[in-house]
Image: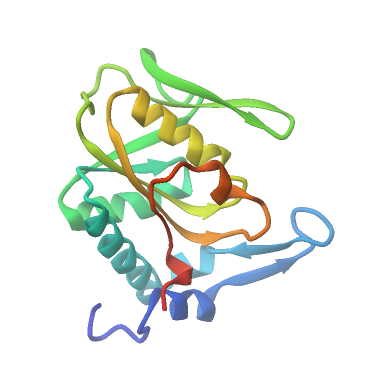
Length: 183
């Protein structure tokens, strides 16, 4: 951790900066907005530092960054580790050819994609990063996509986990690290 950083942990940085929005996106829900956390340079640094430590321990050749907020975190982590960042995009954001995997949403399906001819990730170790784990569908689909291309998912790292939505249960046995849970 940077000695000039006022935060001793990512947990403290999150607690000091997170914005809680009641009744969004639906009545009774409290939305945890990370935007102010990421906007505070020292808080952002504390989160990235914690993610770097986790990804180093999980052994990453690539950081799989999930569209879109995972891009913010994943690219910073990949840069610090000196590894590549694999941008895992939502359907329709990349020109063909792409490798794709579909997954179920509450009301329909979606898909994640990576370029088919940009690089070969077979045999590499990938840590998947996103900002929040909720139902886990997107993260599980990203893992399937990466494995479909021959890479190993060595772990999952998120900043927050929404308790009670069951996201953890839909992931496989690769380690899941929630940065806000680290003290």
